Image 1 (cartoon, rainbow, N blue to C red):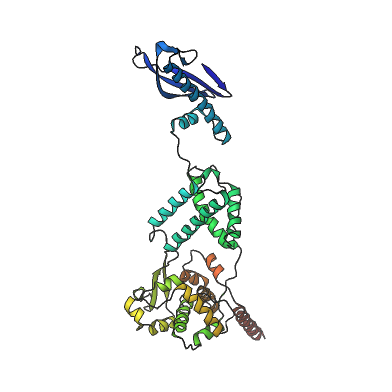
Image 2: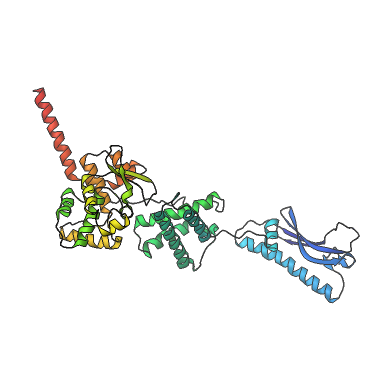
Length: 413
């Protein structure tokens, strides 16, 4: 018996057994779409003598024949239900696709959070090898933001990867800025992390195209704040009555003269200080953020601070260079120090790194190539974002130029 539903044809038939004399045979559905056919077993049998090949049904009025025919009616209708389901979901309609759904032999759709979690698990396994712990932490936060957005926007725990599109990305960016109160550049960082996972899906052909293709991940230029030479000197020379402020000031100033980030200063051990190529003391570490090796010579100001804490109980017991407080406490006490030293800049520990790049090195004539290497940057372009030439350096250079011009003019006369 033939049933036509647009481009889908179904024939119910008895399967020819290997033993041609076998009377009790399996019933199959032959499904044809656009000339391509597959056969699906119903897992039911019928005796050939009780089968109407033209009708595709069992013969007789027995209860067993009625029950079998009802089952076959239902099975056939299910074929067209699957066809409609594929049509509604804009999926490719093929005989094989229908068979896969009927038999349960269909691959589970890839899900966004599932792939994101697998990506993060692989990063975690490579912690300390290819990835720093800070990088892993940032991707964990990105994953949780993505999870929260899907829950908020779609009221779901996860979504199929094939549903990722430009609209999803745009709504995610809007949510980060409005619901999470992220600034523009922070939003772009989270989206860049998510894009890495999305591109994995594209490369594995789980997605037909890149939903980020027409979405610009551009960051706004941020002015890097650094202490002036005068501000840094006021902090260094200030006498505090509180030991905690002395410690915070010394750790901060140490970072101003070494460029070490908070995590690197916290983990700095005495064993990390060794003789360098010039036979003087250098710091040899792996950067916490990038896990990249870094080496930098110790200036006299930094060596003096190290020396003053050599006998400190916490340092002597642990082998650490300085008794660093928690990041939260450091930043809280730095605000207090800024008030006492009349520093108008909102002082945070990260400003020490900017101060090293700008005030301590570039403004004193250290080539940007050397500064870039000490900062652990992959390119000088990164260093240019950190470093800012201050007005007094421009003035100093122009005064020097003026003197050179005057000298040349005198020679000509």
